Image (cartoon, rainbow, N blue to C red; front, side):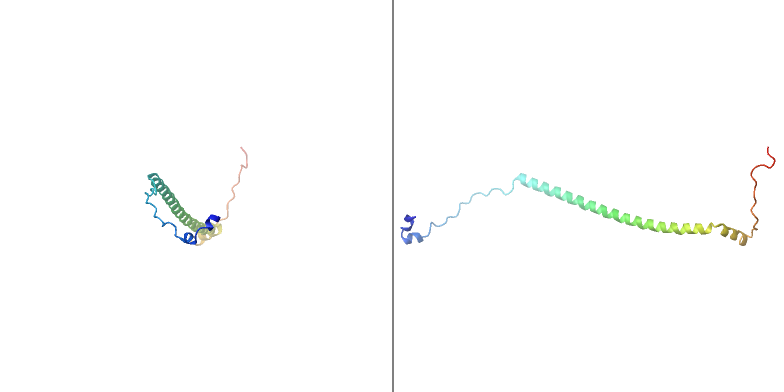
Length: 123
């Protein structure tokens, strides 16, 4: 330490050697062929996965639309079925059939007949 302090001041302030530019060395290749091939392979696989996800999503959307349409058709058919069931119940009432037979078809009402089951004299 003392030796450094004993140097004359002008030597201490003197600029160091002028900086030299480093000698241009050949730059190593950024990517080797294997790096390019593996990068392209990864990109291709990623694109295929993305394509698969997008196509599956489109199929799901199409199926959801079809399910909605089918549910709407089911609701419509159920409403039609309920209406037709009510009509059948109304039209198949015996009193209505009798009224149409007597009034529109000019049929005559007769009392129901009782048929005896079994024999009176026996075999």
